[in-house]
Image: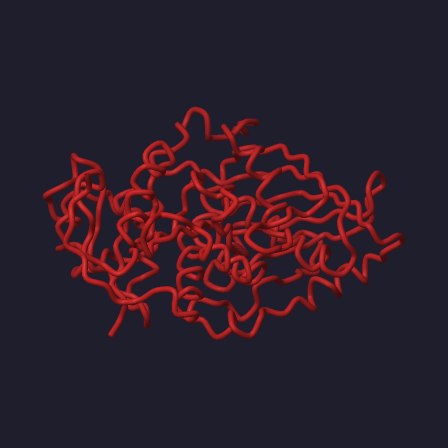
Length: 357
């Protein structure tokens, strides 16, 4: 029997991506949806402005949407695609009521007892769940900021083999990262916006936690420093990052660094999960790659592309990486997190009939 999934923030862009990616999932099935008060009590198909390329599943379209603020969903665990302005209180309510919460929101990412998870990078951080104190069996697991995901996955093999001292990154982030309706056309068309509120702080801090070391009941952050500049560009999907790194190991050749990236292997326990791509990280040799239009969909949107790795005249090496911001960087990454949790027995069938206090 499949585990029953609830989706919080189901009508938003990330919520819709959850619906699309969970259709015909071998382990999970959508049983309940929640959104704002204006959508509550209506069928999902009647209130959602469907943005996905695939058709809205008829079974999901018939589900009555519940008010995310007023009732707990009848399901085994929840995915949260809620905006951070409301996610904190609602996610905490679910955790205290005994629900596993797999969240795409930023609210709990940097809490010392909450895993900030990329399964191929830091699956051992799941052990932090055992130290959460919600007064129940509930817990919260988060996936990173969409730009942090691609950067962290590209840095992972370099960090493991050579060590990292400094990182400078400039991101060019797709419009879909702002949700829907997102950035106004007058700001987006033929333009670049050199500011995304709160983004640089996330990109500078989250990789340090994910590449850190689990010691007892806490993560010791990685010791390197990150400087980030984040921009919004007129691309629909795909966050690109131009990265320069200073390594702890002196005189690392370009070919050695490329071999580190191409030699990155998905841990066996992750490679067996339904949502795991064949390759989590690929290196593209064409000097004009990666490009969002051509490569954002690699591995079903779950593969991070790296290219143009070369010497840096200020630091040691520089390269470009690309991540699908709404798949690997949001809903797809959260689903892979849930698959890993399920494989470790952290997600179970439950009976729920309660009301939010």
